[in-house]
Image 1 (cartoon, helix red, strand yellow):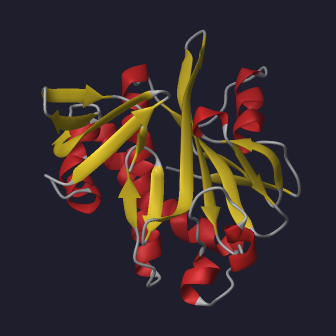
Image 2 (cartoon, one colour; image 1 turned 90 degrees about the vertical axis):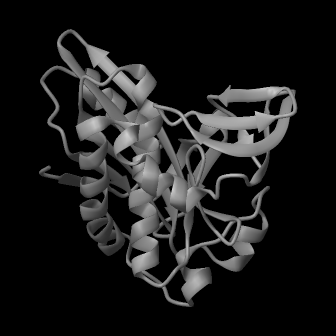
Length: 241
């Protein structure tokens, strides 16, 4: 994949900017990356805000041209999480993906991913938005409403967001390439190894609904399989704890 990186000093949301670009006249090439040094109106799952002060974190969106059905979008998010995990581990930051769209370090969130399918006429694709905490301080992490960390906190080193993006893109190319060959089944073994183990006790809540049980594995499209007291249940979305 050939990447074309566009850096912006300030954007409301890289995903929104990419979406506007997609629906503007003219075809958009696969591999376009829109990155922001400051993001003021980013969104995560369940419409949570994802803000980034200048030069603190890496916020970007990547466009992948694909005819993949909507049901396959979550597993592309999971492939992206594996790419981020590999990057962090290569820098000595022990991390692991968390279903469905996060990367954690010692149970603290360091990265969130939000993907959305877009289509018009004969053009189809998926926008993958990534927010990776790079130079967030401990003081900034403490005011977030859930445990969070950053590359700076974990390593004691400050990083250049532009260089981190350059280092990350080959990892994303590899894992997205595996996903493109056979969807989630192509990445399921490594995902299960890193996000497991099978049999782990889990609690999954989605709105007012909470289910508890043990991890039984993942389905053909990355859905979580939960062994509960009433039998095997298939979970497509929710917060895992």
